[in-house]
Image (tube, rainbow, N blue to C red; front, side):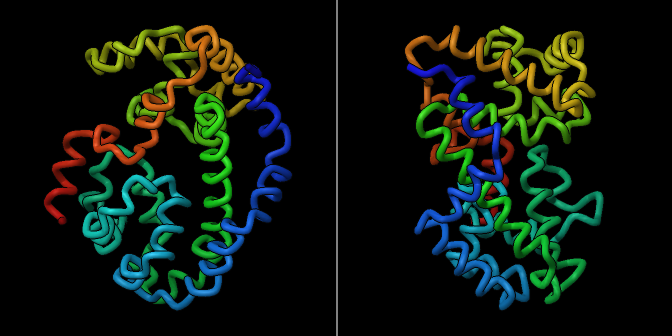
Length: 257
């Protein structure tokens, strides 16, 4: 079995090339062409949510493929926007929803929203990167975790943000050799423990970030000598099971069905 670090480096050493190869995939090319051809016709949140192909593409681009079924939930997020501190999306700890609301900011820009680069090529770029990570995870979920961490870690401002993201926290716990049971312990305890061993600012340094990811891949392979537990790792990114979602989020979703 090829090690996780080797698999990760094969992709990460030239992300643009990896993305270019993915772009030529017939299925990816077909969905991307459709998106670019029709997203400009979307003038409201309702237009987006009601168009199955466009909505699915946009959701996958933001790593929300596990929430495609929750159309009413996502419609509420888009209808309220993110400008008001009390807006629904600003009460969610998962930053993916805020990213989505900021991309499709119909409350601020109205019908002009989909004319911007961020909702056209910007979404395509996100989709390609997300698909690249997803495909990498088909062979070794730890590679997907490493690629995801590489992309998201430089944006982190606190340990709390790590703990709010199941995938990021999984990487950090594995890299530090901490048990999975830590995830169920007192939040303040988790924060203090990780803060004592990780400097968030290091993740903005490419060299230090690379070393942390390398540590993660080595620790992962040591803990998983027979391969990756895809069933567990799948929950980190949502998957098709409700167990990948927090109880409060599931309750909120139920209200909008």
